Length: 47
Image (cartoon, rainbow, N blue to C red):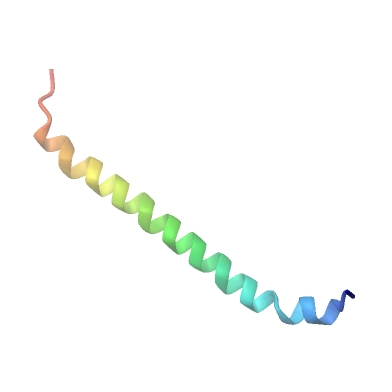
């Protein structure tokens, strides 16, 4: 097994797309959680 530094540099774009995908999915989960909390808060009685 050997390490080719230029191949690592060439694959950085793929890793960047993957990280962007992770951030988008986490953002969707956070937005959905916030939305569920916002809309269900109206149905819970406040003391």
